[in-house]
Image (cartoon, rainbow, N blue to C red; front, side, top):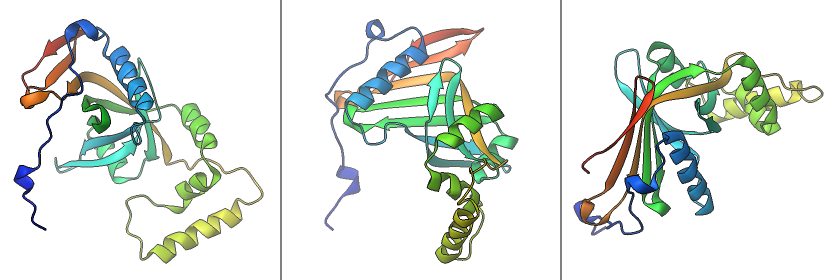
Length: 213
């Protein structure tokens, strides 16, 4: 391929972001942008990069799916014994990134992760497709598995064992709530003069500031 990666660039021209058109409440602003991402039919608008810190202080990141949000925080679900679950147990400080390329927008969020209640986890788990519920039992997330065949064999075994009864939630599977103390709303602009409006929590009040791109 005759491709120069250094020459890959895009000029962002769709929109701007001013203080006058944003809410003083970052949760309301996030709700507005999320709604607009849905309306623009962004591919998986609830996909977000979750960055954690492992026991050695090394950063780790992966894509997870947002499953709910309100003024208390943003929720995703996983295996508590997974790599990210173990990271959070040691360092609850995490960061999230949403990228909505169709709208030339990015949202960054920083905060602390905490487990949601058992009841909340139960409600969500029971709402999942049955095969996804079985998958939560079959996969020892982040652990080494000898082959794809072994994983599929576990799935078949659990599917048989749960064939005639409700599937319980595994005790090590549930939700986390990210409680933010920082938001950044980024709107791409021409000539790399992007708009960056940030909200930081100070004495229980949100302070909005503009950052240079």
